[in-house]
Length: 138
Image 1 (tube, rainbow, N blue to C red):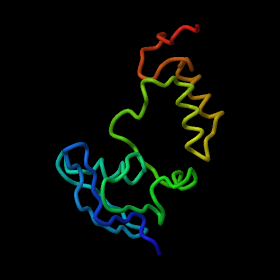
Image 2: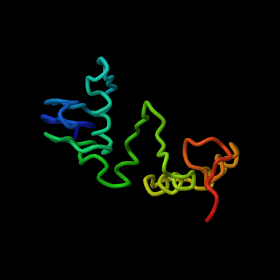
Image 3: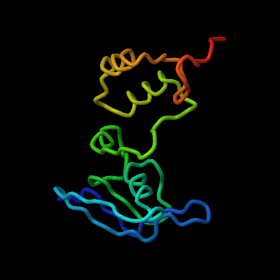
């Protein structure tokens, strides 16, 4: 049985700063694992690598037997909750919904639209901008 997460000599460098160095681990199926360490230890970097959000600088990583985010179906099997608000300020609410639909094979457009309607968001509004500040149409 393939490990859920496996790394070999995994490393990530941001410019001159080494965020993760020589990380080798193998997590078998059915295990619950906690990442513990001080700020800057590489916990968030490891999770970003595992989700395919960032590429490794060195080493290798597999998630569920394949490279991270190998396909939309593969990505749908991986859950990740970021510690910060996972929105892109340059994208509108509608852009985020389209992105969500592209990245999630099980996307429920009707549910997403109901939620947007419930909270009263304008689809043209940029993410993170105050309500009522949607750009005007040209």
